[in-house]
Amino acid sequence: MRKPINLWRRPAAFHAGRRLVPDRLAARLLAATAVGILGALVTVLFREALTTVQAWLSGHEAQGMVSLARGLAPWERLSLPVVGGALAGFILHWARSSLPLQGAGDYMEAISMGRGFIGFRQTVARSLASLSSISSGASIGREGPMVQLAAMLASLFGRWLVWPPGRIRLLVACGATAGLTAVYNAPIAGALFVSEIVFGVVSSATLVPLVVASVASNMVTRQLLGYDAVYHLPTFDFVSSWEVFAYLGLGVLAGLVAPVYLKLLEGARLLFTKWIEPLWLRLAAGGLVVGVISLQWPEVWGNGYSAVNSILHEPWAWQAVALLLLMKVLATAASSGSGAVGGIFTPTLFVGAALGHLYGTALHDTLPHVSAVSSYAAVGMGALLSAATHAPLMSILMIFEMTLSYQAMLPLMVACVMGYAVVRRLDAKSMYSRSLAARRKEEAGDR
Image (tube, rainbow, N blue to C red; front, top):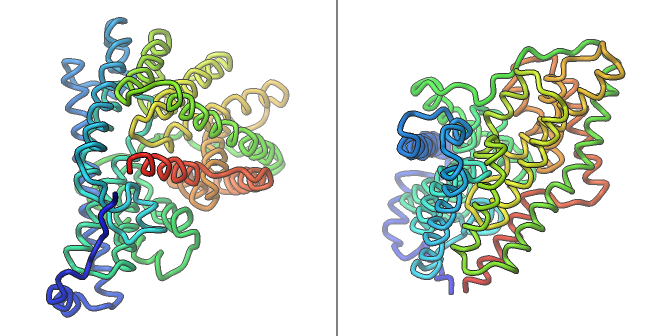
């Protein structure tokens, strides 16, 4: 049973905290700044841990998971995801059986429905499991554990201040914003992600502290530590205004594909849960699927960063893009469905880029004077992200912050809004509503 959370056990400390940190905007912004710095530092720590493990596995400093996979022998490429998955499964099993479940298991649940309480030991254990899975080739994103760690530190900071639950929830939201900003180097989109998706409304009362945390996080990662943009997109090409209708079609396509993609991931989770036990064997089976696919397509390792950058900058035949898209979706379904701890945000960006590339290639075959294929790939990332998350504003600004091109704004707005409109018309759930529902079922099974 989940232990009840009592934030009022020390009334003297509470009153002291109230005197030291009064309920004023300046105090909230100061706390948001501190949380932004902490969130950035913990994401950097997790990123460096991944780099260290990758260097140990490869014997040298590998440039990402795809580079690591290509440098391994075939038997190593096959077995490493299996071993990493099994180890992650043992860690998760130990955490579920030995550590009491305290607070919310997910930062979104802690913000939207909980009291802002995120357990320290459970979060650390899940982060170690995620480190094992991701560093051994699982086809998931590292943004999930990074954001969760940042949100957990914010929760601890709020409880150290002995703040009431409403203000702790806001601090947790600031921590999640800091984590997202540090991962993607997109401070505006990081703040809007939490405001639009988690809170469900964009208001100054919540957006201002989120922006402050985002700015503090970005200053640490970019200005002080020198981290560069995640994607280096080529110059955006927008030939003429009539192409708006072509991007409108891309938005429709993204709105139709997103529910199918999410249902496939959900179906894989149900399949693994129903047919494979215990947990370590389930994650090992997911790793085996990734390992088998990577024998021919090492690009399926990791979250898809290098594959997206390659599609954006190098000439790809449409047949190769289509085949890699299929393999990457299958690998992501196996990793996510087996229970590996990680995000699907970044793999979704890859699916959108590949979809946009295929759409742009088809247009070039019939209308050779349209924009470059890379422009359609960039807009495809935003359109599918909008349809999958039900957050068009965040998606528009995230791709804009990556391209830093005003020419991209009109195509992005058209495609992202259309993708969102189509998916809402289909009455499909977002990836995060599905994730929360699955998380609640998992926690109910642990009790």
